Amino acid sequence: MLMRLFDREDGQGLAEYALILALIAIIAIVALIFLGSNISNILNQVATSV
Image 1 (cartoon, rainbow, N blue to C red):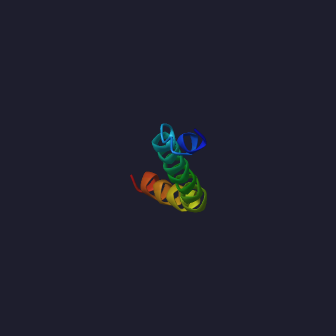
Image 2: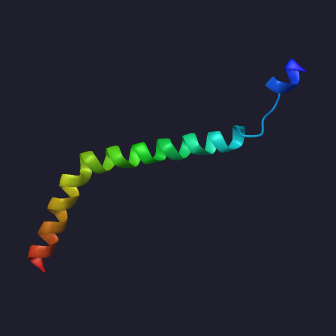
């Protein structure tokens, strides 16, 4: 009976997808923090040239 409890994999797939989604969100946030000012400067240059 104890081994059956450890062999259950019902929520394992959902947990893995949640971890992957969290990792992607963290990477996106970090990229926006570091590249945000550069992107803002480029968009400002485009706006002033138009």
